[in-house]
Length: 301
Image (cartoon, rainbow, N blue to C red; front, top):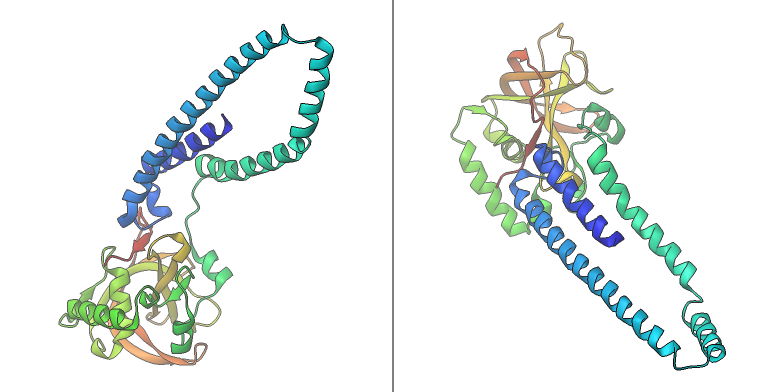
């Protein structure tokens, strides 16, 4: 019966996440149908497990009744010896087996309890500080594997072959290349950032605006801050922090995790910590804004 309650617990956990509108904290909402399918499947497995346990209980009752009838036809001393041998042979390893099952059930209960009772922690600059971030070199891009966290530059090439990614890059470039005033919002943030980083020369001098939280770090100078959004390609396992180095007007003072909306002209500069030339947004206007209800962005193809 423990399996039944574990399956029911997982179904309840997914249902609560859906009900509370927190699914976007775990996966790209494009794949919401997968969690709904999981709830349906778990409930079906609950029903199967309930029927299985019910049938086992009925079988045990019938076996018990049969053994009572059988006891009346045999000598009590013979039955005693037979039972002793039977239990000695068949159940010598049962304590170890029970212990292993108990540990397995406990491991399964941990995500259920944490998913239901613990609040969801929103990713912020503390994650950036802990993991660091970098502008990957071509060699590092080639070495990346799906599922690794990404930083600064969105890179979906790891999910495509070389030829497939070239087609995707050119297709998405066409969505932005003729715009001189590019507005990156929740729906196109990751796609737009990836296009800009893949083809920075096509957008030099263009006006770009986007929203994110500020992060100073230890490497940016007085007037520069990184402005980031956490983004999911598929789920939190391949999430990353994506954005751009932003040059603010002199005298601007911002704290980590302050949310801002910035508008500026795209330029480039050699950034010593990365030992590379990277895109930089030179701000023409900016404003502080409240933290969005959904602070994350998602890769939409």
